[in-house]
Length: 334
Image (cartoon, rainbow, N blue to C red; front, side):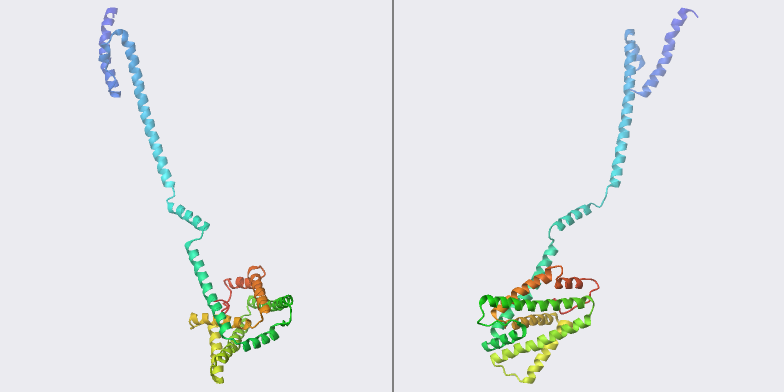
């Protein structure tokens, strides 16, 4: 084939290849210009056009790659988010409850405040009633003769050192403190004995002692108080009625304090208040020095018995607070 025929055949081959390349490039990206449009440019710009096509083609590939990377990133973020939502605890109110519990532990809750108020009211009411009744009984159930006789009887029974009117003030105070210390020591020894009996479950001995003590206190000491009231206000009561009345008063009181079954709580509380009033009325027969010294010594003993580690009342409360502790009626005002 001659050189002239080869030059004539090259445009024909170019015309046959151009549609194929154009279809392929148009399929890849319709935005790219067709080859017919590129051939209309000058021959000097053919290289520039080719570079432009390559640049745009590369730009197209980078765009597709960027879109793929964006899709992959979005899918990864969605997967992480869904995993976090699955792993996130749903019990959110518990955190609030924990905060509330912490806040309640730092301060006093409403239930504790109500309980403290009710406990204070439960203590103040019987103590106030006992003090008022004791003051009234000391003032209205006494005469000068009964006071003198009662003072002499108590001095003979409870005082080791006699305090007379001729004794000086310092000597009377010292003798009063000495007598009061002896009385408090006897009370403390009896309290320790009660604790030992309760600790070793000697409930029959302990119950029998307390029943006898309460019966004697209500029947005998209460009878003396009733006798003074009859003498002062001139009540005419025969001997049989007097003994029957005091017997019923003592027996019913003992049953109400220790048995408590089928008996209203008001009666139990009333007999406990009567017991305290009768004891306070008897102690009012001490002379002034002895009364004030005994009051101070009893207050100090109460602090020792309740607050100190070796106090008998504190030990008794610990024993009674155990789960297997037996019931001990008659010791607490309920």
